[in-house]
Image 1: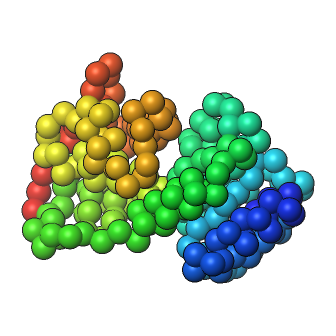
Image 2 (image 1 turned 60 degrees about the vertical axis):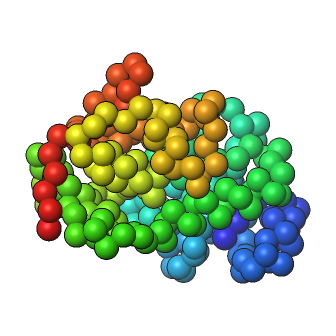
Image 3 (image 1 turned 135 degrees about the horizontal axis):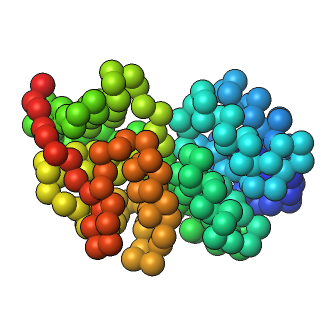
Length: 222
């Protein structure tokens, strides 16, 4: 679904995506978009920041209380403060409104692929990683803190799983970028730093320092 008050842009996105196999719905205000997003099962949302009735940040905050649907945010000028705020409250990726249709499709495919990704190894499916009160099962894409399910975006879960599977070894920023290459990160993309920072605040298991990103301290098998 595309949530944007620019009706012409919505039609442009729809006309580009539908021949690629995407069924596209549109909403043009914040409240309308939120209501549709909560009532229907979408594979992903394309969400504008500036919306009448309720801005995109508020829509995203309310949505994340009940849904982990992948969200690709649009910002008017691609300004860094907008990107950081969106990522911190649960967006999976962002695009400036000067995007090309090819980039839009690539990023949309990346966020939907991550949200449905399955383990490729039977061995991985038998492992559960433990660090204090935190437990991560990559095969089921489940993370528990004090036995309570954690609310994570697909990007945040992938970061957590990557660190968990390192089995105590420090992972550098560049190694995390390589492990998440399906997202089309490049070496100058700072959005992953926002996700790492957000993860660190929640998990309390990730140690962040200049030149390294973090590690898990203990592993258990199922």
